[in-house]
Length: 229
Image 1 (cartoon, rainbow, N blue to C red):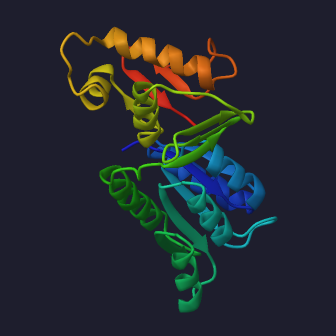
Image 2 (image 1 turned 90 degrees about the vertical axis):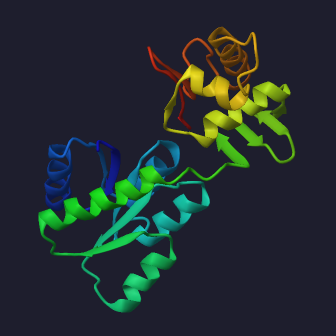
């Protein structure tokens, strides 16, 4: 099960070991060496799992976890730390972590815990988003309030439905047929070209460069994928 993982660890030797282990399992791995960079990555890119050291320069692992959860991160979080007291584990879990592995650890146990977390994450449905910000865009589906760079813009009902569907499946590639079934409810005379047209209209409204989109991406031969960028 290949996934996109973020390791936030200031021990260069340890992060290299963990990165090599997880790459050998087929995962796409990004590494950050301090808390602030780790939080920026966790909240601006799409990851399936965060692996966080506890003590980090700039921002602690539990704080990264808490803030990332507040900003909509719904992947798995594994804390790696030398702090093995019960109260430490409880604090980490209460800040939004899913699992906890105390240093030093065995490589096989790390891989097993990562695999178990990824199985759970991939089985669970992403939490529907009511409000989100990405790039210069602010979206509030509850109030039907949409702004870009502080300037309001409008979406038709179907444009808003399509955008919400893509955002609710953020980081996942969804096919045109699936979009038609979920957004258009398989209405007669609606074709995949309708999806392409509405995507083009959305890009014109939310992308800074519609011809080189950062948020609604085309996955050739498969469909579309939303990224916060």
